[in-house]
Length: 510
Image 1 (cartoon, rainbow, N blue to C red):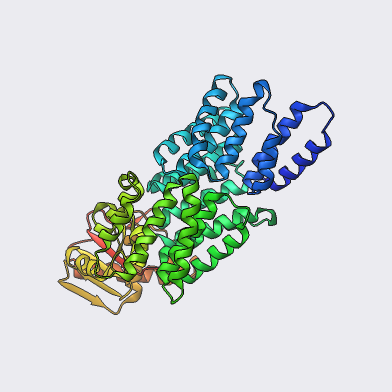
Image 2 (cartoon, rainbow, N blue to C red; image 1 turned 60 degrees about the vertical axis):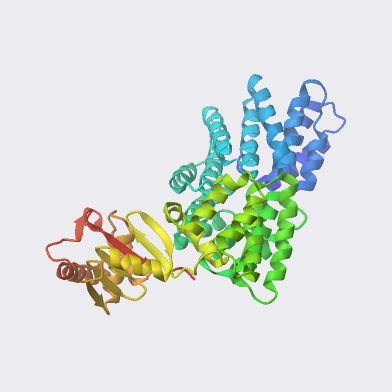
């Protein structure tokens, strides 16, 4: 259990429990049934999880412990709203009786249930409490799992910086198990996707996949498939998103937790709506209906909001004369009071533009694929962050920044468009890398790999080429910005000086 080999743990707990039947070892049988219940839930064998929970004795003082485990099963079965109330009561009881392990379990699963019904703020509070319990008790593996869980909650709350910090802390633990490691990488990936950093997000998905490569971790790999599909959808790779979600759903049929199954249906529906082939929209309608049916059972608010968005996107496909915001607002009104939540607010702001849209470039790109915004032509990166942009946004940035580089068209523009240099793709690539670092030093290795588009950097072979290119770029920038030194040498590489108003246009991933 500690090593997160849950399928083996469930099998061994079940065998031991059955072997003890009739031997007068009721307490030990109860403990084995509890372990079996948790192990089955974690590797998504809900049939055996329900059966094991029924074995737990409810007599006398055992009743509250038995009710805790049955509440955890209800949560995993999709009854998140009811389970969240029961888990809150179980936590209070376990805390009053000094039962640290069960108190931790009540908070760990209680936080997950709160997240799935859309109460992200409360979920984060409960998850932090679970981490503190595990940390104080010296349960390092459980502490790492809680940090990975918190990182996912932070990403869902559009708190990317916090998500990265918590995920890094989880990954730094030597006691982290394979599933928790995969979750931490998925949290990194989800946060990077929101920020529009899709290549980095996919790197973390690849690491998550490696963490759960063992044959017995197929259920965890299905979750990673859906995560990669969601990122591919944001980047416009609709065929891959459909392939991955269909694979995950084929694995999950009849065994997955309701939330994971409904989320997979939601991502599949979104990919079909975005791809919009002849039969895709009909298939998308069926997937939305399945996701909504599953979500309504447990009041899984994020999935319900997603269904409203996709229903609006389908309606939008057939009603081009109606404003995108009007169609979406109408769909979200059905979910009142969720309309005022983080999910709905971020989506509406992403359509309307402004500061929130800057904070969620990945969401802006996704909305463009679903037909709620103009098509995304690239990303703009400056000191304020990264955001999805149309050609109009790119033209506006070109005319308003002191220094602008369009990596896609190999153009450097200075002084709000007064000076333009074309035909120097390598200089443009170097400058774009430095701008995207937002003032942080870039090492020779990273600069060479990204500008030249290669996997390795050998100082003896590549150093001269890099230094010559950097010197040419500095000379070029001195010509178009007289009296200014734009690039400076840092101890670990090169960086843009702080007082340069620079912006880069980079290609949207395809």
